[in-house]
Length: 316
Image 1 (cartoon, rainbow, N blue to C red):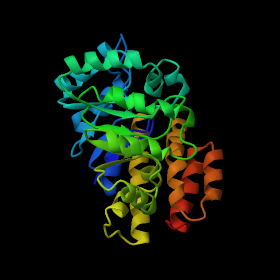
Image 2 (cartoon, one colour):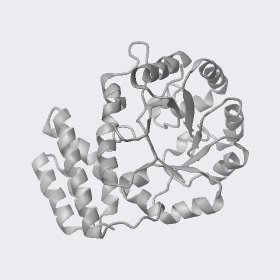
Image 3 (cartoon, rainbow, N blue to C red):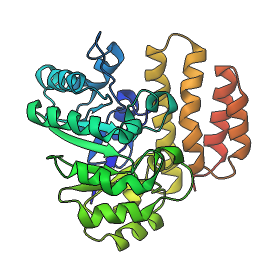
Image 4 (spheres, rainbow, N blue to C red):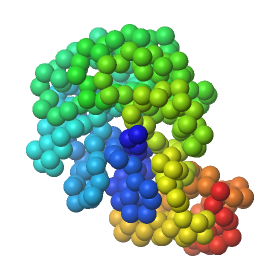
């Protein structure tokens, strides 16, 4: 099985990726948070830093692009190839954010199939890179999935990653597994599953139903449990105390590297709060710490809370 690390906007940038790759069982491929080209700039400075080869040494990284304009997509893709040597890019048709969808991007593009078909026709005629796609199964209705997949079948998509929710679901409610089953039975190229894999049990249930599946993309599950890939590969993991010490080193490196690029303690504090929104799921009896971290307004206070967490709360 190939394991991919999903792009998580605002979280899984190059600083996080480097630290994760250093300390934990690594995925086969990382996908960058999306690049959003426009008429003024192909890549913003932050996006350039995120895709620089020297910031991703030793990792397979695929940049993700979000746009509904073929000319912008082509411009960004060719720039990534000529400047940084990338050979594959990924199109985001999955982001459910209201501000993205209202512009007809991300999963919002799935309700404009005529435009999407014209977009694909131009991209696949002119793009010199492989193009993979990460998608949801519709914007407002999963009944649209058969038509959407039929459109995808017309084009040489390198790999299709399917998150079996519609845009309106966001990340809530049950996965619409019947829609992934339809893709599994009808898609004629490489297929990757994404969505709600948090434990070995949920993974085993997936591969039991889809035994020929070759790739799984993990997002929130990996942010919550950085040892998840090791569990899924059935690796022998270190003892709890050693794993907790490693998570602490990971946290220290993130603090240092984010602190070097962020302008003030407050920015660093809120950056680290994002981390704990997921990572606290790995700690025993962490609800009090969750409330404390959410409410704290000073970096000094945050450090005391986190030190107590590492000293006195075991990993699940």
